[in-house]
Amino acid sequence: MTTGKRARAFNHPLAIAAMMLTAIALLLLMDGKADAQSSRNAAASQPTDSANTVTFTREVFRYDAAGRRDPFVSLVKSSEIRPTISDLRLTTIAYDPQGRNSVAVLRDLGTKEQYRVKVGTPLGRMRVVRIDPKVVTFALEEFGFSRQESLAIGDTTIKRNP
Image (cartoon, rainbow, N blue to C red; front, side, top):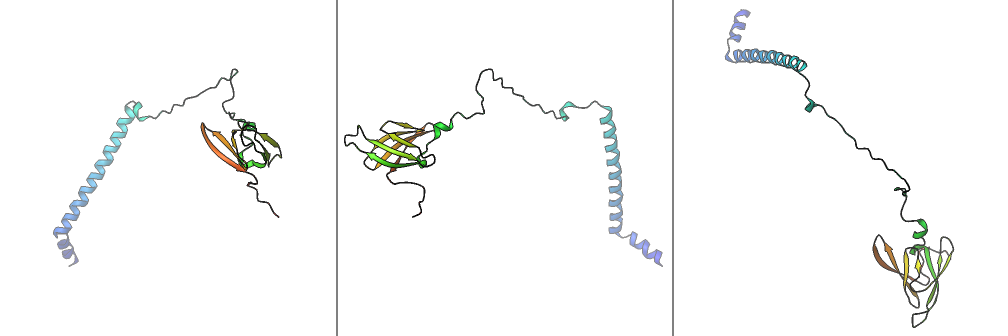
């Protein structure tokens, strides 16, 4: 009896369709393996294509110093940078109302060095532009641009403890 039920199950339209799909899938897999193997054999027998290979080229530069400066050394010397406006403290101003002979005394807080400046005096990358009774104005030239900053008597960036 079981053989009859099995026979009827294989005669069912869905079972027949499932068997057909399985047979087609197996044929396609076998055909795909054969095609892949034949293409491998064909590729091995043909010369390799240079378009498939990747070639890296590298440019090499050589610097011949021959009396020239080292390109890795800074163009700005540290002596040209110091003092900066934040390093200075304005201690004294001898003011001339006509503005011709005014003198200001500045102290570098880092090195304790003292500077006596008049209008037009260069100081590092700065130049004194104006001296007023309690303020000295500097022109700072950095990277091709000029800006002005002022320093007043008693103005300092260091906090002092009483």
